[in-house]
Amino acid sequence: MSFITGPMSAMAAVPTCRRSSRSLLALLAIASFCKESAGIVLRGAVSNSSGDEGLANSTPSLAGVLNSTASFAGVNSSQQQRAPRVYFLFLAMDKVSNLDVWKAFFANAPAQEYRAFIHCKLPSCQQQVAGSVILAVPTVPSYYCTDLVSPMQQMVHYALQDRDGAPNPYDKFAFVSDSSLPAKPFSYVYRTLAARSGSDFCIFPSNEWADVPSNSGHGLEVAVKHHQWLTMSRAHAEKSWALWSTGTLHNFMSYFRMNALPMLPNNNSFADHRNYGCLDEFWYMLALFGTLHQPNSQRDQDVHLAMFTGGPLRISAHAGWQGECDTFVLWAKYLYTPGNNPFNSFHSTLDQVSIPHGGNFARPGWWDTITTHGMRSIRHSSFLFVRKFIDSPRLADGPSFTQAYIQNVLS
Image (cartoon, rainbow, N blue to C red):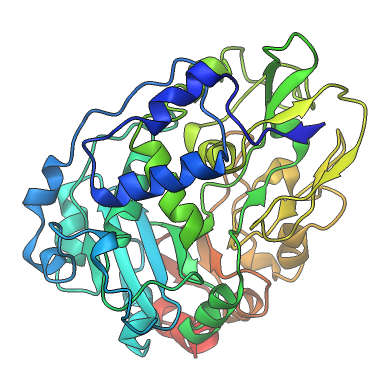
């Protein structure tokens, strides 16, 4: 049992190393990828031929930060390396809930320590963030579950074009939901992420992982499921863009026959060929680390992955939450999963009024009411971000949710 560090077949690897019409940034990262032979390409991957037309339509504020005609390789090698930078990448529909909290989060942040980008599904979202430090990238087509990776990678693409100072290998690229809130002040989030050398993946319990019979005829190929709200290192961000922009694993949903069988509560187990989930919950782990070759589903093993925070990865039918979970999300089905469970640890500190709605097996829980005690619990939790919050939730013991949140969490 081991992670495959090469392609599933030599033929499948060819499209990844072909010449691309994408930016020189993608070409350089592809060259690095081909040299390292890391990750895999599934047979029949669909090439992404949408082009970069959106670059020419950058808004003035975005164009003021990015030089879309220059390449990452154009950075002067003699330029002094700057401090690590955190790139906050917001994925949004029509707005960012509780935007004033985020404005307060960024208000006192040193400008050189962060950039914030957003991909908006609808124009109202772009209008909402106009004039703020959150810069909207051109919208690309996206589809719930089957493809939210395209807008996520659109933000990665633009973030990688930031050439204000020589890039730092400790830069981080953190995906943030439009219903998330920061769980700590900026200084805490920055210090925590900048100190980590690898990428933060919040790994679901193993019965959520996907599997198909191996092409070799022996055992299974297993794809590890993770939260969408991950944080990548610079090296992983560069590789992810190189892979996605050349079509790698675009066919994941069909190849692993995702959601082909009716979904029922509590009918899923490890290596049972019943695969559920969305592209954004598998693609990054699969693209960056490859599939797990599992010849014996009854055998437990630890796998050490380079640049994987919180490793080793435990391969077991009984494995619970693993990795590094930066964002609290309430999945009621796994709230009480045994083992190292930061979700239950935090949830147990909430007062009754502050406990979020539970959601169901297909949708996570959410907050519409909280107390100042609940806010302080967020501040003292292990998480950097929390979700889901409706816009303008009710503060049960005070007049202003926004002001109380700033005082109890961000101060």
